[in-house]
Image (cartoon, rainbow, N blue to C red):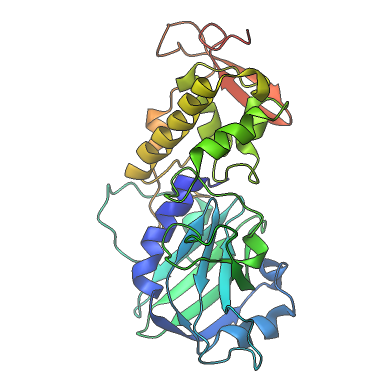
Length: 320
């Protein structure tokens, strides 16, 4: 499932093609990708056509685009406006095509995904035709992601809602999502205190999107390895200093992943131009079971934990 770095790569790739542009036409090819939208496909089309996208914002793994009130906005718009919300789920992709049907070109390493999902038409669910001739295709093989229109509501702290926006407004449907570690408005000391109040295993806590958003299984395992913490240690038994060290490791590993386009293991995650990220080459723990720990040389292991696989060094990351 795409995590914060992958979704931020998509946000950065998408923004130049949609920010300040009008959605001229909407095609819904599979209404299953609108399961979170109230009113069905006709309502979705009506609420988007003719409206201008103001920017592309992100919090954790959620993307949204605040919409202008022009065009086909509701006759009685919500007090703070609306946004198009996009969640990639496990296999969702946003692909940009120009007026001639060519994919967007990005200046990055030419590492292109291969496989079924690299077909620009396969698994196509929704298509947005933008002013100027470009189009945005939403593809989703497993249909766990989707799009919907949501009212915007005030952020509780009155600060900008996330990366890519200066507005203190967040989609109502994403308001339960906590700030992420790359958000400049994050109150890290408050986060440390909240984490230390939890009795749950530390990995469960940092995967909880209501505590801190954007961290998934890959980057949790990597950060726990860097901080030398066992995934099953109770959060309330870890010192504040060690929690800060873990959060710093999470932030560092996600920033490194961002620099190389995120992590791709197959064709399910690609950027808007169809290119894979290649942070998988730099992973130290995730998926490396049976290989030597880069720190101590002992074999890394994989352990089942709460319906997930956790990867760790049993010597560097002792439970006690």
